Length: 228
Ligand code: ATP
Image (cartoon, rainbow, N blue to C red; front, side):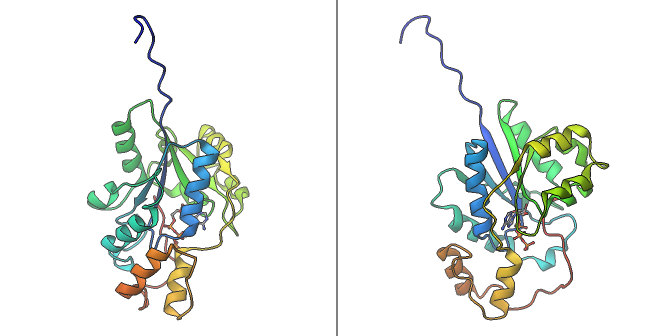
C-alpha cells in the first residue's frame, strides 16, 4: 500500500426494515422487499416480525416460532434479506418507535434506515406511538398495494409535521402491485382453496405439515395487524 494513500470512503449502509405480523409471509412481502432494494439502493432488508402489534390481541396470532420459521424458509435464498428478532425478544407490545430507536443506536449515524410499508398501512401511521418523532429515526418508504391509494397521504397532512409528509412523498415507490395478503392465504386454507405460488414452496410445505390455519382464529373482526 502506498504511504499517504487514502482509504476510500465506505459507502453508507442503506437498510430497509419490513415490519409485520407475517402470518404467514407471502410473495407480496418478498416482491416489495426485492423491488425496494432496487428502487432505494438498499444494502440489506431486515424482516422484523412483531410479537404483539399494539392494536391486536396476541391470541389471534399464530405462535411466533411458526411465523419465524416460515420467514426463515422464505428468505433463505436471498443474500440481502435477514431476520431481525428484536420485537420477538422484547417483552410487551411491539412499538415501531422502540424498534427504530434501538436500530438507530445499534447501527450509528452512517446508516440510513428505511422503514418499508404497504400503502394500506399509510393512513394508520398517525395513530402510531410518537408518530411525529418516527421520521427523525428513519425514512418511511411506501409500496403501492392494490386497492390502496397513495392519495390517502392527504389524510395525514393535519396529523404529521411537514417534514414527515415530505419524506413520505419522496419515498412513494411504484412497486409491482401484488394482491396477495396473509388474510387471503389464511382464508384460502380455511376454505380448502389453493395457496400455490402465493407463498414460497417451502413455506407451503411447512404450513401443510403443521396443519396451520386450518381452524378459524379465536377472535374475529377487523384487526390491525401492522405496526404502531
Ligand atoms: P394481514 O392480511 O394479516 O393484515 P398482510 O398481508 O398485510 O397481513 P403484514 O405482515 O401485516 O401482511 O404486512 C407487513 C407489511 O407488508 C405491511 O406494511 C403491509 O402493508 C406490507 N404488505 C403486505 N402485503 C403486501 C402486498 N401484497 N403489497 C404491498 N405491501 C404489502
